[in-house]
Image (spheres, helix red, strand yellow):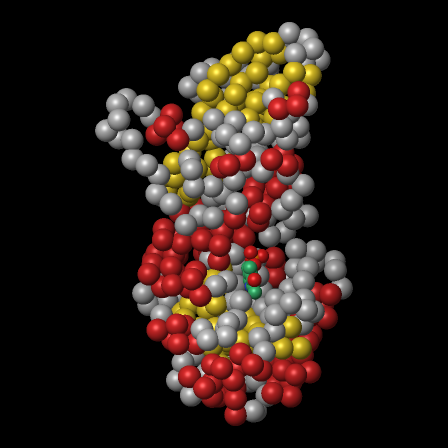
Length: 369
Ligand SMILES: *Cc1c(COP(=O)(O)O)cnc(C)c1O
């Protein structure tokens, strides 16, 4: 959604008009893609841009990656594929969630490639494609979610339906790639290698962001998503990716309170000492999770300030007693610097993926780089 333009509404700043600003660094996304592509050791690097490019906007992210040399993209749904096609007229675009009943003609009309995960989907696509329209075959190596089980995939090798369905790519997905010590990785790598050997004519793809860092997982095509957008693909170690999103909110008011004062709905926080509070113009209606209530932080002038009490729909209260930079009209950083998306995910009891894909559309969005 485009932010309302306030340029002609007087000297109010955009952050003043919208409460908060999300800055998305397209240059960092491109640098992250290049970094992962270089780790591919000969494999091509695609980009997974489902959920509106992990909340960052397919209309801007898609063309930036295309200009950098990315030629293959993955989204979840037909509707996302249509949006991706508008931004990427020449790209190969695969639809991960498969082929819904009756959808084949719409896929073909937008030159979208289904990732087929069952015999029923394969037959539907073959009936339309007759081998002319490309598609991928999804093999389930352990997720039990989408794709043909390994024995069925092995049985199907050499079957005429593979050619009739225009299959040009074989793919599978990791259960626990971000946990390299999990023995399921080795089992999936071995099973996928067996299936791949039965389909020597096809290109193969196994690695998501974390999979890029697992031996034996790279094959012909990498499929990173999260790491492109700054998420750490190797959670035990230092994050090698460049940060992409930065969320800053306006300080609407600052007040001093006495010992025993409470803050916010239901008075969930009580001042243990005289305190200075700042109220930010951003809340859960902006996609910032209410689950950070009482546990998250924001940075004011670089000083970490605790989030107090319950996050409201449009407002958050901070303890800025230690942050002299907290004044009306200044800003607080909610995502950025030491508060990277993985850290924000942890403080909300979730993962950075959910923080990214929940990013709101009420605040103003700035694209840089
Ligand atoms: C989402 C997804 C990816 C990308 O995973 P990341 O962990 O975000 O890199 C790759 N492949 C499939 C099948 C997916 O669903």
